[in-house]
Each structure stands twice: as C-alpha cells, then as structure tokens.
Image 1 (tube, rainbow, N blue to C red):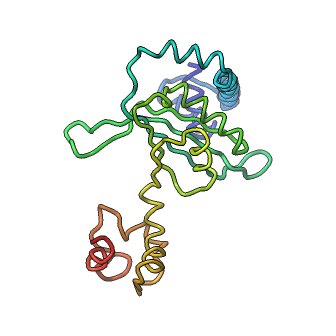
Image 2 (image 1 turned 90 degrees about the horizontal axis):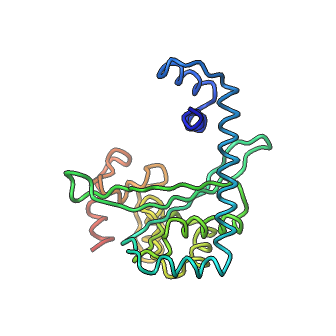
Length: 233
C-alpha cells in the first residue's frame, strides 16, 4: 500500500491521488498521508542514490565489479537521454535535471518500429557537476558502461554533452529528431544558400522534416516536397 501511495503521489496532486485510491480500491487515505509517504519514499531513494554514487567512485569496488562481471554477457545496446525542465518548488522555479536509461526492441507485429524497454529514470534538482556523479553511478548500476554500444539521444543543451564527453567519451552522440529539425532552416539558409520564403518554422513542431508529414500545407498553405528534395538529395 505504501508503494501504491507513493506512485499515486508523484503522478498527480495528493488530493487527486487520494480520490483515485478511493475510487479504485474503496480505501480512504488522506492527502496528507499520501504526502508523507511520498516524501518518505523520496528520502529513501535519495539515500540509495547517494550510496550508489559513493560505491561508483571507489576504485577498489570498481575493480571488484569488473572481475565479478567479466564472464557475464554484455548488453547489446543501451540508450541514455537527459533533459532539464523548470519545476515549481517551495523556493520558486528551479531546473530539474532528468536521466533515462533504456534498451529497445521491435514492437510486436511491427518489425519496423522500435520501442523503449527496461527504462530507469533518475531526476535531481542539483548543479550539473553533481548530476554528472548521478549519471555515472546510474549508468554503472544499469551496466550501461559495459554495453556493446552506448548511445545518448538528447537535445542540444551544452551541459548534457559536456557530461557525456566527460563520463562516456566513446558513446554515440545523437541530437534527437525534434530538436535537430529546429535547426534545419537556419542551417540550410546559412550553408546551402536556400531561401525558404515561408516565414518562421518554429511554431510547426518540426514539420519541415517530420517523417509522418509529406507536406506543411496545414501550417504554411503549400507543399515543401520540392524543397525536401533540394535539401536532402
């Protein structure tokens, strides 16, 4: 029950979580009880993460780990994604840095579509340097450092790629599709001397190169197929 209250408490407001538990389980739990359990779970998680970080920085433990895992099969490919977002706190708006580590497989019945599996998340309100320690410890815990291939898919934030370079310099680095699309107009105009003449693309969600769209007529009133060919051929 404590785990359920914690999950509900971090998914929505404590009042809404109380209502959901009442509706689904016919159990009365006050919002304050859910708040206390959610905070307690957060403290336990923070303690576990602190222990992981301490172990990940002890050379003797790392050497023992390598000997223990030497004969185990390595994961084929592990992905990592990081991002930052502003969140309201008791002391005002602050940036929450988040990390996701995951693997992938093809969707059942859709051999051309990949989906993320075995996802693990970490989030902290902390300076970049401290978040780097969490990145390192979390990756070791996931055995991402031993993967045959480690791929980071993130946006273009400088702090993210500095951490990747510092801790995993051999990892494959990919700017995610959505954010990469946001630079296409600027790149084409600067390097290929292409004048689009369609105005600002920032409001169309990367429609210029989104794979699900062949045209931007919804946003700009005309097809961009010809300019796709100019840019990509």
